Length: 134
Image (cartoon, rainbow, N blue to C red; front, side):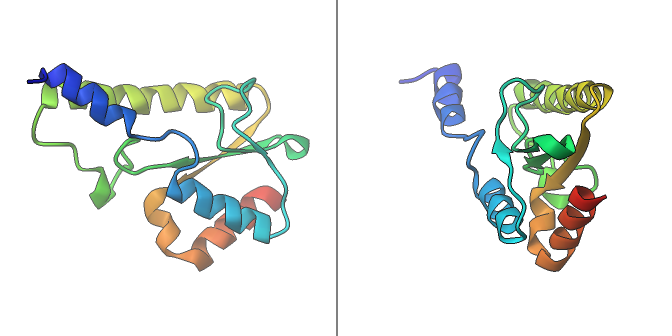
């Protein structure tokens, strides 16, 4: 029988950090709009999902649960194993803020696209175009 820690680590390994379904949707949309980008540039804080070097802009595609999207129904904290999950999710939010600040201090503009926003293609298209073209 596996310990809770072993079970958790096995389950957590299945969670992807790159090439997620929401990220792939955004990548296809951005490409179809005619914009070209770099993926997961390791030299930048947080390895943004899409990087537009010439424009000094980056896009992060965040899952509402993992990054605790404020006011989103998908961001409800788990009811079990809260001693583990609540600090972990809070660390994610804090790390995100630090990453955005580092990027902005280096002259980069940051856009966060939330998983729940992808339901409205017209809105997300407008949001991306406005950000990239500003």
